[in-house]
Amino acid sequence: MGESAPRAVIAIGAALQEQIEHGLLVPGAKLPAERNLSELFQTTRITLREALLQLEAQGLVYREDRRGWFISPPRLTYDLNERSHFHAMVLQQGRLPATELISARALAAPATICDRLGLAPLARVYRISRARRIDGRLVLYVEHYLNPAYFPGLLAHDLSQPLTELYARAYGIEYGQVRFELLPTALPPEAAGALRVSRGSPGLRITRINHDRQGRRIDCDLEYWRHDAIRVVTTVSQ
Image (cartoon, rainbow, N blue to C red; front, top):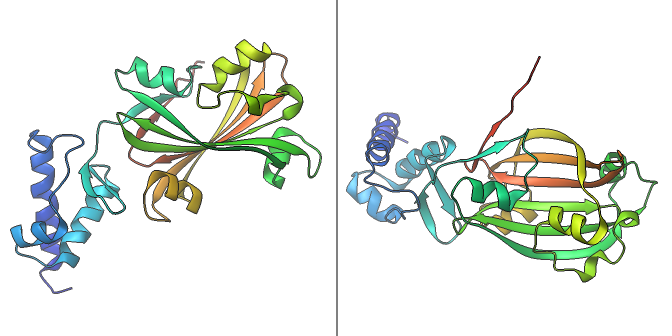
């Protein structure tokens, strides 16, 4: 990269950011191909790609494999104090949710899941993998690990529906205490593939260990979010 390249990266980023802030590039809009953008800004594709990557790190644009670059929509507010499920949370903020079931099966629990759910070594669990969209955009890959002792016959149900509602309707189980763990991460292969991004793309992993009203650890969710999709908030009272 030549001596002027860093200044070119800053200038390209500033130009695109200005277009976004003035509403000329609207959320969800597809940017021109990198070749066309590099010709527009009279620079190399390497310099252009560096500018786009910096905007991606700021959450202003995002990339999908084999589809190109897009303007990022507003972030969803993820309130740790709220007990609503994904569909309710998205709908409450005027957005459109969708869930796609990827797989559901019983298997031997990984060691970390045994620990989080207080299970014996090599205990069996249900694992449900799903991809979730907001306004048509893939934003979340989640693996749900459930203790089958509390959910007999679960795999026969429609598992694209909110599990919170299924638990209450079919099993009389409601959530009680929830423990959260948030960790910036590189998206693992399963999550990257489901979200149609490159392996190792930045993401946010939210681990939820869910108890029922009797204090039993009933399931554990591993949520892998696109890093630009949510804003996490919480309120602490004295």
